[in-house]
Amino acid sequence: MPYIAQKNREKLDAGINRLAARIVAQARGYGYDGAFAGLLNYTCTRLAMSVVKQQFGKMRYWILALISGTFKNIADEFYRRIAVPYEDVQSKKSGDVDLYAQIEEEIGK
Image (cartoon, rainbow, N blue to C red; front, side):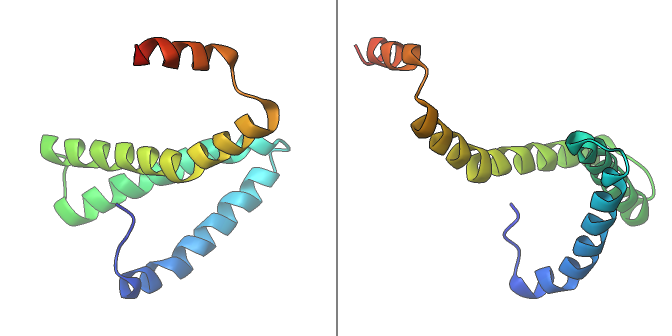
């Protein structure tokens, strides 16, 4: 859940914004829009592993499970808050897939 107290956000946001700027600058050097994805993946992975190393010294199964769950929750919340509204707008703009309505009707019977 990304909804931490405001005072805790303020302690992290400046560093996060600097890191984001570095990712964007490096991605631009690759010359294609999707280049940021690998850099973002690396950054998030390395950040998680660095936190584990600094806080616990070594990896344990429960930490793996906790971090995997955290990344899953990040993906789910990002999709729910950003992708779903975006897709809803695009569906209205371009028209829905016709079979959705048919299948939804069948499910309702």
